[in-house]
Length: 357
Image (cartoon, rainbow, N blue to C red; front, side, top):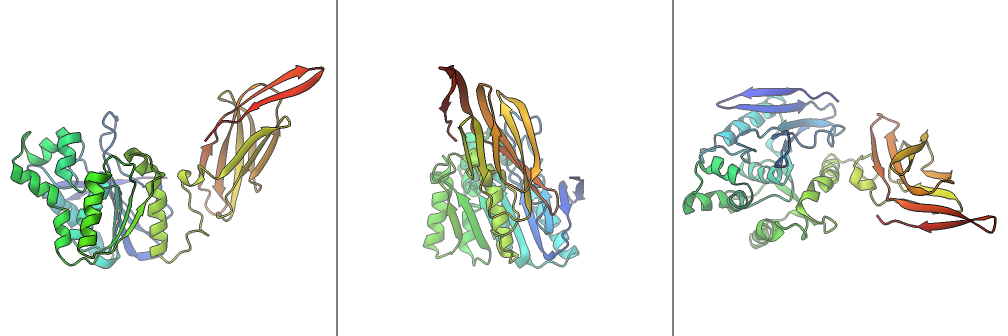
């Protein structure tokens, strides 16, 4: 997959990646990025390019490379110059491809979700898809990203007025008529939920603003949002395009994590992958013993595997699913099962203990 970065020359240079759609040319998805991990070698990165590579519409990925780790696409010293330039870039593509405001979709998770909310609401874009956004930006950066706070505020100890302004920029967008369709993913297990999500949802209720809100408590913490958001994002987009999501080949590793059966019995590994919702796919398997590949079973139509074993150790299956249509593939691994055969009365006695997912 080739990724070509471009620079939009405005008052500030805005870096971006653009992929042109072939079918749904009336739509533009604008993807904003979250923070990179604090100690990551790459400080600024694009999000969800691979997750959306087979979504057939125009896709615009915008980099937030201002400040030590990004600035929520706002700017330095509270000048909001980055915001102005970013929206100019979006406007350039809507004019170039003659896309209506209603068919612009802003998307992102965490910091990217905050930007998706802010830009989508402020500039009246048609759809917003956000995962666990920080709605009180000042509160978050002052407590968890002080270098970013200093960049945005232009000082280490901002005034109460500046803090209040930054904390309210998303909320105050709800004071006007809302034309955006809002799709929000979050979890009550996210430590940011009570500070950032609940007050926003409460205000939506107070103002009678309808949104599609999914609270998924299988998400155990904030960092897991990035693992669950691609599936949520793909599903919403397919629904917007009128495509049957359940009958489409949607590749997301998180979607396969709890869809297998795996055991060892009668001196055989027994494995079955439940992917009935995926069409035109094939399966391959690596049998792994003590973290080493013992055997490879190449691609086949059958999602089941029965394999004889005689050696003791910890076994797991690394399984692969590949689309017959375009060759796209994903993979995942099972839990481990410890297997120890012992000879008893000239026979073979199996001692088995199943692991847990």
